[in-house]
Image 1 (tube, helix red, strand yellow):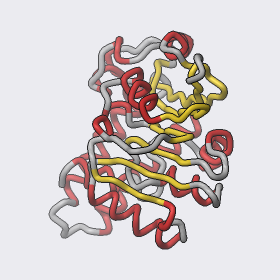
Image 2 (cartoon, helix red, strand yellow):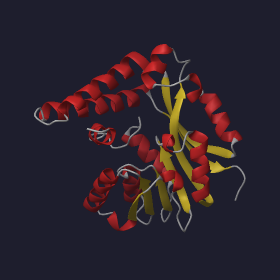
Image 3 (cartoon, rainbow, N blue to C red):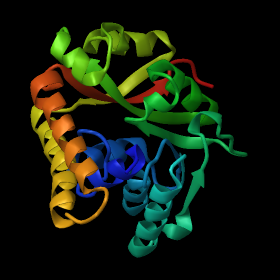
Length: 249
């Protein structure tokens, strides 16, 4: 079982692949997406952000980009079930290299900055797709407190991989963006996400004991749970920012 399969299973009950509650996602989308907007998600996974945006804004249209064809197929099926497939286009492509013939009023990339090499490169990619007057909704980690060895080992990280909250916002502002809204994920949101991630894998392994992937699913869940509880819980935070370019285009 490869990492993509494990991720699909782990997000069964929490399709938003970030520590954000459903109510938080709805509030962010209400601010980020206007009715009639064209929306792009860079690193969309199964397109859950886009599906919810289209349900919230019945005149909006959306496109998503991801390299996992299997998860995109799942997203297309879910869009058909929810009646928004005619307004959603999902592309199997490298988000960093994706090009479109038009611009977008809202560009999303929440929890996917690894695909671009970091927060600022992700913002640079989003800027290329942004229409005049548009907004970017981006989510990434930050250090809630100075990371110790246990947290760094659990995340396979070094201290410079993230900054603290204030420095993270300062970097975004210095890059030419103005925050117009933001959300710092709560401990409850983190715990709900991590228990769902590990629990979905464990439940699948228990329900499919004869599947060749059951052992790998159990091992991945146990490893992730230890990394979270014994490593980065309370150290790694998650910040979602709604941004506009500081200089109008």
